[in-house]
Image (cartoon, rainbow, N blue to C red; front, side, top):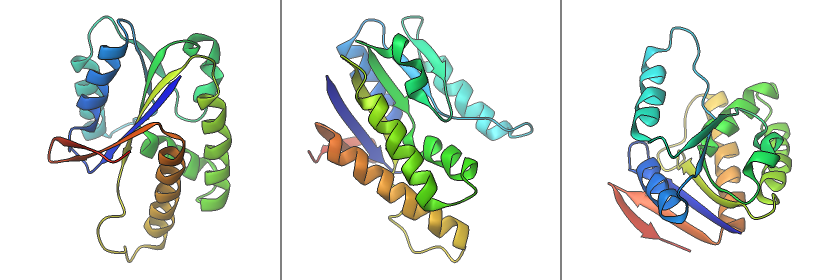
Length: 173
């Protein structure tokens, strides 16, 4: 079992690196997609479509916005790419009434179940959203705090951590 975290800014190359890493470790990896597309959100639909088009037929895809460990029987002994922790945390944040603490506890419990699946080779993508200034929006500040805690938890558990900068990976653990 190995756990790898790839984090960085938006469009920094995180997903592409994670996909390449997954394919180097398995001929048939699993893509665990946490995104949800709201009706009328054409821009997000294009992003999801681009990710799908990039993957070949060797990938199995599971779309799961809240509870990836519910798919433990399929994930056991497999290389699994979770893309991404940020959208997973977003889904939990709103499912828990914008309550940072409840959302983090829900994430922590589910993350521990996912990481404990026997033989899983887990590759996770996440965003570093707190590198800029502090938002004037209270909701955004609470979510940014949640995302920071999610990333810290994932990095603590991970065997390897990469930070993507302008398409270049920097190994930090």
